[in-house]
Length: 83
Image (cartoon, rainbow, N blue to C red; front, side):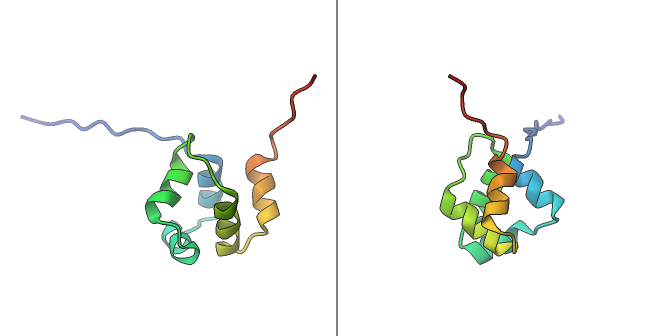
């Protein structure tokens, strides 16, 4: 009898894509920031995960990026609703 496993296919989040593009080691980010590896993975793979401001700042500092640059890269596409 063979058992087949279904793997969930995940689309990376904007943060996940950013970290992958920069070849960032997520374990190193976890160690530097104090965030858990599962939390870093969740933020990288789960589109419903909410990135807190303190996490964004810590991650930016851990990868030597200006937090404002990371904020704009991840959320610069947001626009206000027109009235």
